[in-house]
Length: 488
Image (cartoon, rainbow, N blue to C red; front, side):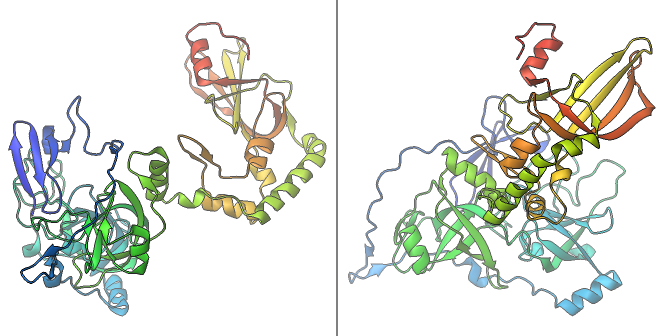
């Protein structure tokens, strides 16, 4: 259960397996931060120095035998409803009794929503038991609750949290509010509640999540929650993404070797974990380690790896395959040898005043502009010129398939994970100053007095351009402000 203690504008939430965490109650009953205080969702601070682990000494009983601390037994008396069989799900979807959609769990809450496929309907899934082992991001099959099964999930008026003793999963804090139904603007229909009866695609469960680790036991037994003792069966993994339930890791040869247990766990270490199964009688899902420790909370390298894992981008942080690099090398050679012939098939804009505007640290300059005034017509022509990547990157090629998989370049604080190899994005397709490049351009005209678009004067063309200048944002802002800048 969660205990809320209110004093002035501060709420303290006590979880049976966690320290008391101060929260600030904002207007409207939301938990967040007040001016000058840290947000609930703020990045974790750098950890203080950790002392060397102390050896764990088992307590001695009356006869000198080791006394094993009390572990968490709640899962043994708990059971989820069985998932429906595939044929029953098929018939239920066909008849309209069942619906399908993606489960979206609210952060730091015990409520989820499902947007029904093919409609604008949103269903509320209240309580971990109604989520029925589905995880944030899973594609689920849901069934409407009967009217008598609906419970309070949110307050229609100003929300004030009250104490609650009905948490059915300690992987989430449950907040009970003072009125029935789901809050909406006045006049809007109240959202209906449903429960998960099957998981169509475990997209959320299959994710690798970043966790801190503790021993699996209740407090008050005289042993630190970070001490794993001889005879302990499981370690508890607590995801940093609060929408994901806690996960049990079995104590076996792999976890003993990687975690160096029995012994004390480092509470600041972050570990990649994946759920493997969640049985009907399991209060928690069971998972496995998916690699080595990524570092300590607050360390930049660890937090970068953390961000990549949490956003399913860790597969970007790998080198391009050799066959892809060979293909790109051939592509570059062919493009250079055929460049003059291709220029003759395009509109040549190399004598126009075309320039790029990008961050000062940008490596791939993929777009440029020109602005031409026509005072006699009271018009301004603007051209936007985009690097013609599709001319080089053919559909179905190895590089094309890899670009589709990566989708985008990822910009980190210390480096960039490119969508395409550098020979393409930083060479052939980068509009560097004083280099002729193939582009695809759009031209449009604005009325200088009104700023309105002259629609009949909008057109597109394959072009070749030569940027005369590379600006960054700060330089352009100084020009807009009327300052003189040094010519780059």
